[in-house]
Length: 236
Image (cartoon, one colour):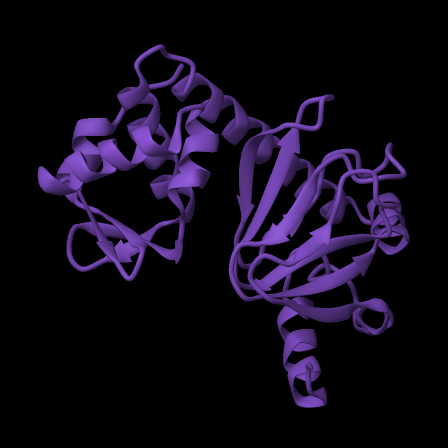
């Protein structure tokens, strides 16, 4: 249950978001009245593939796992949305239905923005269109980087590259030289991202921990500076 006090705080936060920051006072107030807020427990489905696309979401706190699969319905790829990010972006002006599914990877609070409101803002405010285009381009770039990093035949390399990808996209600074992902990422998640088996992921992670490249803190990954130096690759 979200209290009225929390609603006011979330409205204040969302008013500074790039989707709405370019609007004048009256426009912004009218838009905020159409936005609702919702909480999800870890594991709750936010929407599924082929659900009607009624809302675009803004993450206020927590982590969202976005799943994309093939036509057979086997999910093959995860992407994540972190606080202040919007999802899903792909197909916004073309598809009537969601082409991905999403679930709460942690306890989660989101803002639900009606698609019709977003479509109107795209048509009337260049700044909104430019922001959404930039976000869409970032998603495409990240997807391509992940693909390039996980196409090699060596499973250990695929797993370490998947970990590198996660550290770059989810981790915060931890201490003087380490990085820490402030969410629990499971071996199963890494297996899906890297296209390997969960048991193989477990063995590789144990080796990396034993060699001092990474650590765990309450299930959260910590990446030491030598992991980032060892695992850094250049993508053209």
